[in-house]
Amino acid sequence: MFDGGAELAKLSLQVGTGAALTLSALGAPGAWPFVAKMYVHQYSPDAFWEGAEVWSGVAADVRAARERIGDLVAGVSGNGWRSQDGRAFQRRMDAFLDELLSIEIRASLVAAVLYMSAVALAAMIMFVWLVAAAMAAIAAWVLLAAVSPLSVASARILALNVLMKMFSGFEAVESGLDTLLHTCAGLLGATIAGDVFVEAVNGDHSAVTDFAQATVSQGPLLIWGTANRAERDLTAHGIDGRFPGGGFWGDRAGSRAGLPLPPGLTQFAGVKGVSDVSGGRQTVTGPHVPEQDPDGSYDYPWE
Image 1: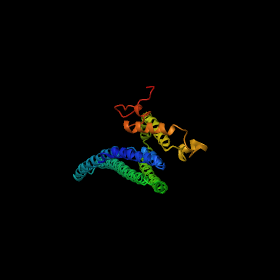
Image 2: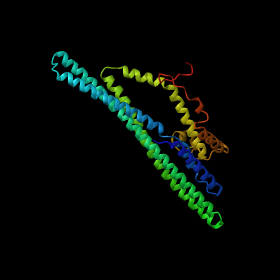
Image 3: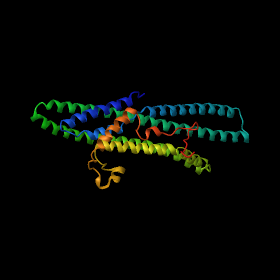
Image 4: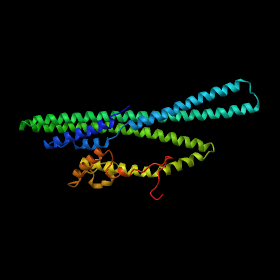
């Protein structure tokens, strides 16, 4: 559905980097924060869309099975099985059909959330591409103005003002995307937690045990994912050229928040960013992604 999304994100970063380099050479180094943002938005919505297709198929299969079983049960009941055994059978089958309906609803919800996430990420990639194109246009305009020493000075000032306004808009769109994705994650978490809670209230604590075991079995991937995210964020802050000014990393920076990084770190981060994008993974943590076992779990180093 979204073939080429990752390539477009990569192209946006390349165009944005070229524009930032051009503007810096012309005395208007205000585009590098965009490059750091574009580095962060190197992803593809394909995995989310493919996952949504799988869950949508699960919902359709469960719905078809529920309807077939419902027809069979209705046929048996319609044949006059009115005894106590017949009524007990009907109750058990009704409970089973209710469980199938619950599975169908949960699968449909997961599919809807994944579809929504895929569309949101695809829209963000398109937005980033438009921003990169605008940056290239600004760089070209300042370059043309450089033929006259008098006009280039005003062009620099105007370009910096435009870039500042663009960056504020970029952050607003990015904040909206973060809110949407966190909402999607919350819906998925609430779906799982609600299922476990209902089972526990009904006296079946196996769901709690299964959830705990599943979480532990995914531990290596969770640890790796956290390290991979930290590496990506630190690289992006390095490309930006300043200590983080807010959030988790801003708190870690302390009194240095917002100040320029020591000489050499920005250049190092830029080289690493090129390596990350060209290799399609983080340079340090990328090669160490844990291998998945046939049952879906991951082995810890000591196992």
